[in-house]
Image (cartoon, rainbow, N blue to C red):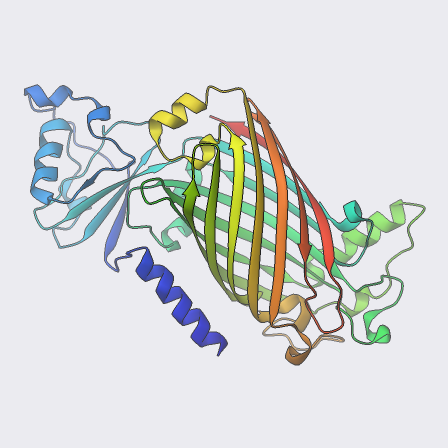
Length: 410
């Protein structure tokens, strides 16, 4: 049943986004010929006459003529003359200085790569809610940059088949989970969450389509669960360094070492709102050796100068001049849980001291998150609060807080 849900849901997402099986993503780093531009009146046309954020040349003949008249052509061998959709990604704000030669039976789509880079450091912990249980600590380093678009992993990401702004990022995440009490090993307390921790390296591509008010995000992750993730070492070290904390008992029973690999796809569709607020519906599917689940939810956000939610070049340039930007949000979601390695153990290594069975895990989990952020020039701060319903039979509602520091580069 889990597999059927994932297949149907993924097919729905792909069909709704009008994905095409035959497509080529062309980088602007391709070598161009040194022939001069044709000497005609159209050769000096500015890029603003060919808007990157929403233009689709549905008539290949017209596209070919425009390119031949306005820009130097790439080497012909770079694109084979067959019937395919060509997606060209240009750095945000760059004109069509480098282009491709297309034939009459090819369609042509332009996407932009977000020019702004950002380094983010996120710290999550339930100490903000005066507890020490379940999801107890999370640490995340993330780097978003146009240079990530040239990573070989980017070729594995699903392409969004419409004009959009693409944001590429890589991140390193470590999450830790404990039973309801760290003073009693879970194997002795009975029905409880096992000790577990994982560390993953992820690659994300986010496509924002302002015309359709749609955001298409996909992630690929690879990592490890178990002692190799160093979760037990970190928590024990923190508890020992604080004289008021007792050392946690039971980490020797944590989920055994296993490989993590997974893929996540999410679609966010704005349904109403304006320049200062927006409401959207969310849908996501996740499959792999860490989590298998389906998600549906909604998101409401408001803010001043919400430039990062806008895909229009003119608005981005205009609003980026604002020194202070404010943003607040509330997100609610429900999940259908098919598999959770932090509760059930890894898929390949079943040599675990203590885990929960599938019948002991709650099939439906509710989650809500609220927070706000402020940005001044290139510095940003985000604060958030999350609450989640019980994840297993006999479990409790859990809460934790989040702090994110952002540093922007352009």
